[in-house]
Amino acid sequence: MRGTTALIAAGMLVATAAGADDKHDFDACDGRVHPGKQADGLRGFPGTTPWQMVGGDMTAQAIAACTRALASPRLLPTQTLRKAHLLRARAAAHLRAGEIAPALADIAAAEQAAGPLSADRFYARSMGVSLTLLRAMAQARQGDLAVATTLARQAMAARPYAWEVQQVGNAILQLDPGATAGATAGLLRLDPGAASMLLIREAAAGHFANVVAMRDAVVAEWPTERLAPMAFVMRAPAANQLLAALVMTLDTAYARAATGDVAGARRDLAEARARVAAVMPTVPVAPEGASTPAASVDGVRSTMERFIDQRARQVDARIAIAENRSADALGALAGTPLPHNAATVDLLKALKKAVPADKAALVPDPGPFAPSADEGAAEALVKMVPAVLIAPETPRTVVDYERARPNILGALIGGALSMGTSLLGGISRTDGFRSTANTDGTTTVEFLGNTPSSTLVQEMTLLRAAEVTKAAGKPAFVIVKRNDYARRLVQTRYGAEISSIPTGYKSELTIRTVDAGVEPARALDAAAIIDALGPLYYEEKKPA
Image (cartoon, rainbow, N blue to C red; front, side, top):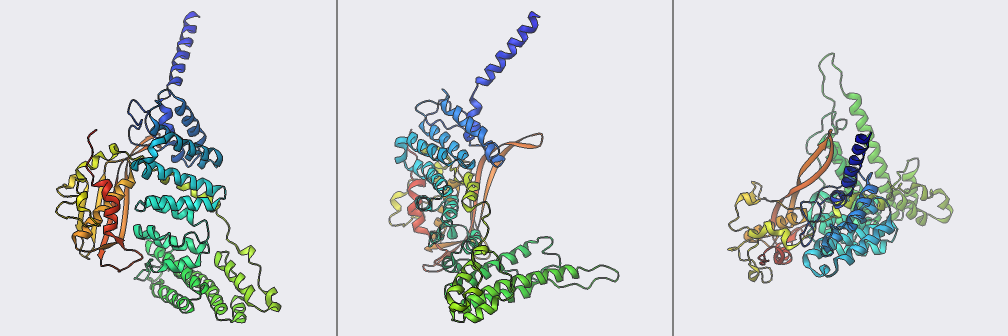
């Protein structure tokens, strides 16, 4: 009996000792190991915390872990950056849980904990921008769009060449009609792949003037070959390409009509019909006795025709209103089911104003046609929280770039760069840099960085692209295509992912150099990039 009691007591001691070890709380909170004795308390690469991995189901556990970590004696009073980092992680978890007041309180506490760090350029462009975007998200969640959009613009201006910052900032601005006017330019220049989706989202929000303003910078990539009979059923890339280009073109047609560009609206409608007709699948001649996909092809054709006809009637009606033909506008809508979207709401409001008073009752009330909020646009922002958690930047975190940052600031007078001493002068392929000339006249520039910060890698690649442009004797370049990759160390248990730690990032830009004034909506000024990023990346690392 005594032996049994001793064993139970020993087991309790072991359990108590393990429970008192709070090292894991740090990792469970902000993804980094416990702070140790380092001055800033940041150790190791930031991993993915449980609440990020499972979509928020473990936010309560993450919040509790953050609370314990912040109270732990392992966190030294001097490790203010780590304290701010932990508070930011708890704020993000609160935001994911819909707890806005605690999230805002933690953001304020993180800013206060940082103290004098807020004046440091590395902190300001990483943690500072991150906290600003988190605050903007929280303000948007509670409906204060004026504050949210102001903060979003502030963050976007502080980090104009950071892809994630521009993405999240634009998503916040799109919550407020009119707020995105002119603000999409940065993202359109950095990511051509985002252009069509941005335009479609602006149309869905009813920002028709913005759609027209953006359209010249967006290329509709129509398929050039006829689609296979089962392309839509199998969701082939060409079918998806056709649908994206079609929706974008129809959205633009309505936006032009709504803003008075009647000729442009008709031109877009004609193009949409011609492009679709040119690539719609045909029924092949099947061997005797074999089944044919005729029914599937006919079904796709009729569905596509109904969709185009429905949207075309909206455009025709809006054109009729612009031309003071309200009776024709009513006729265009007669017997036609109207989609629940922003265009229908705009159309019915405009039509009700245009028709004579005795005809106003014939115009349906626009209210029931308002598009349904898919969780609420502000709530959807929360899914972007991980993109806002920018890794803290310090002089120590850019040590991997020491060889890539020779002191050539003296050559950066008004953006003039001495190409004899370049960012990548003498750097071998093993250091992660590469530039490849393509047969079509474009150049692919890439950088692979062993760093916890994806934004650093993206900016280094962009800076190299600016150098390549200057070396070619051109003032500007257009990003034709971009790809961004993350290299991760993933741990699993019983087939389930239990941790994911980024070990590096790669950014790949395909660019085309251009003369001044060419493609102004998409071109990036090489000298402006060098002037903005050069002081950070060219400056030699100071001795400790």
